[in-house]
Image 1 (cartoon, chains in turn blue, red):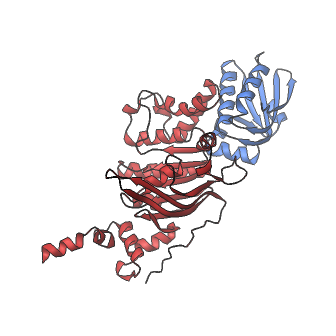
Image 2 (cartoon, helix red, strand yellow):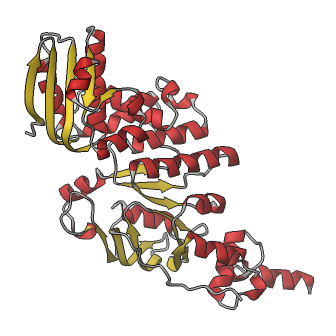
Length: 112
Length: 298
């Protein structure tokens, strides 16, 4: 099974999840389960580093939206960082750039 | 005199995603006689382009669409697909059922009526392909449905039943469902049929918007000329089951705008009549109308 998560770093009340590969209909369900496991202790802030992603389809976007909804309901927040040109374009056309909190670097996201 | 070529731009510049070669489809009529509906049909479709297949009623365009999606077996010819999951072009006619099913998952199809399930809400209709063909959780599907409905401006109608929608809204909901699985190729069967001109224009704009946003290849079967000229990159004209012309929209515009009297080729006269909807010309002559007129006028 595809595992998109390449690294998980805990930083105080925040978790940084770095991903790499293609976030698609095959890999997104496993990614979703893994992120929910990592967030079992209800972190205040989850930062997902998308710098290593080469592709994302609607399932990927839906998965990120669902994670954000879950975190928000639990009083936490989701930030996305290091969007590639490909992902930036997808977020622009689907207007997801207006939905997600997006930062250039992990440091900027953690400081926000 | 207007110059027109019957074979110009038959091969697109970009990477070919569909290649149709020498397609023939025959049906047996009620009298037991074989009727050839499509014959020697060949054309290529480039990745990302919108190609319109047009022609009068009974010209074979809907049959061609059904052949392209693998619904009808061919009597002769080949249809090669080069979708992103394939390392080399693959012939639809020799694919195993599993391969055909895998290919069809790369398709989105908007049927004439929208073909929504009446007992399901709009949201449930859009969710159906994902819940049937993926392991994605219901919570994530919920988000994808919202995303797809928002793209076609139908999010406020998510919980409505199809019977509560207008014709245009049904088409938009059908479009959201057709794009649920992020198709590489979208097939549209008469997307403007039964719609008023304003709604028809709105659907055309939505189709163009989606093509651009999702970078999909679109195959549109229609006989609505206003719509065809709005959306097409290239156009294929069918007449009596054969390809009359493959050309760019601009080439067809030249043909449409030509003075019929300036056209010397029979095919050009025929297409000029069809594109303009004239009631006089080779199309109606072929149906015997002129002879009838001569008869009654002496």
